[in-house]
Amino acid sequence: MRRLMTIALSAGLLAAGCTQSAQAESVVAAPEAAVKANETPGLKTAVLAGGCFWGIEAVFSHVKGVTSVVSGYAGGSRADADYAAVSNGTTGHAGSVRITYDPEVVRFDQLLQVFFGVGTDPTQLNRQYPDSGTQYRNAVVPQSREQARVTAGYLAQLKSLNLWKRPIVTKVEPSRGFFPAEKYHQDFAMHNPEHPYIVRWDAPKVAALKRTFPNLWKDKFTAG
Image (cartoon, rainbow, N blue to C red; front, side):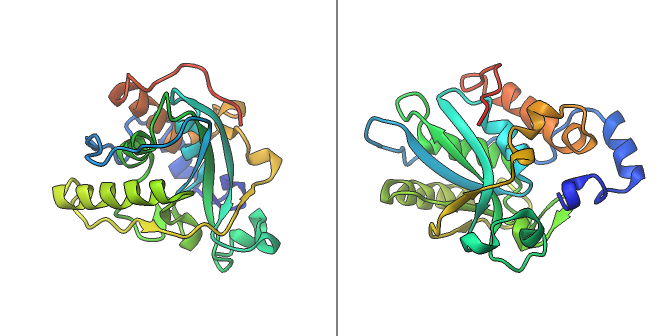
């Protein structure tokens, strides 16, 4: 997702992406969480980093109970929270999404199930497929003690199951603030469904969500 991701991929990759079948790159049968979230009523927020925020935003924008998904930066300072700086990989930021959700419709542990099932490959260190650098790491940034408890339980559960061929490297990071990305990044998949990057890498994730989590799927894209 560097330089608006239009020049980061080679022409060959772009051409291949438009003709390949819609298969998500890392779809696993992520289990229901043994540790269920128990949050108080009222809208809550979750912050997740899973590589390019375009795809993570697109996935969670189709989850029932989600009322908003905003692409942005987490892990660094406000002063460095812009695309050009974050793209250098030296700011501490990761491309992230802030998800606003109703815990009476979708629990935080279910958001994690979607995240690990279709959103990100948790075994890739500081990269997600074509994108590399610390800004593309996958991480969970708990916004409450309850989210931290559920995250720890779910990661332990996943690690015990050996669902992937490589070890899970997802980080649990402290919340240092979330800073929305530039306007052109918001709702990118909705506004640019034919963009080669979306077609190649992100549309398959959304298709996998619909296929593997039909109980959580909603057709309408929830604009941030």
